[in-house]
Length: 306
Image (cartoon, rainbow, N blue to C red; front, side, top):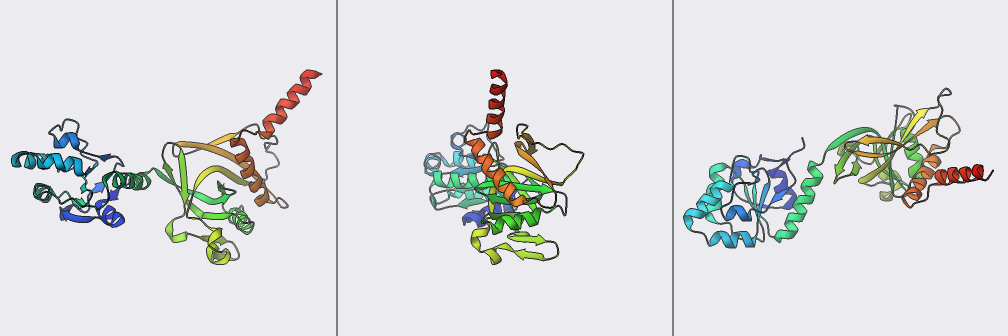
């Protein structure tokens, strides 16, 4: 399970640590954020204690109208062993009751100068990205005409060489050898390279090259949505390969299915050009034009006319 430490949240958003210093290693395991308005009013039956608690002007205005005993009771109930942290927005001064309760339970209380709605949106997006399900795939990810193409295949089949040819033809490298893929939202797969090998490409006989240094910043990008998989394999004479394109194979990555094409490799085939055409054809299909299906329909119509 992916996790984000409170200390990482502080560093990313430049938050001020007010109290609860001993809880900086607490982990945030869900991306949902709680605005504990009902809890401040005293209703804790369904308190989502594992969520980050964000309080703005509305919650704290009501909190300050409570009696001192009620304020201590509310903050004590908010600061549980499972609560990762409490964030106060708009630079509002943190009430003393929060400081005392958070220090007792080691729940960090953080302060931000940002407006509540904007801060909530930014933290949610950050947590969804960091906590998204992730997998690593052996392959090469390239941005071809705006389509994220994940090239897979056995070691030595020519994935990196094909990616190099695509870069020379004006396309952009995202990752080589190892592609980290995160599922963001319901069905979006976003691929990137591990930081150690970012912008690097390994070519057998030549070694490791830095694509950004050789071809410029326009030849690379840090991440890209994975739209399709192209699997390279050595040409098997006994195998029948798809010649019409009517049978659309799918592959499941994490919880999302995307199209998968199998390209047989043999001397004389220009794989870079074929992948370019595959990317353009993918875009046409998304626009409603399916060449293979239209050919099959015309063929059926011709046979019926006879």
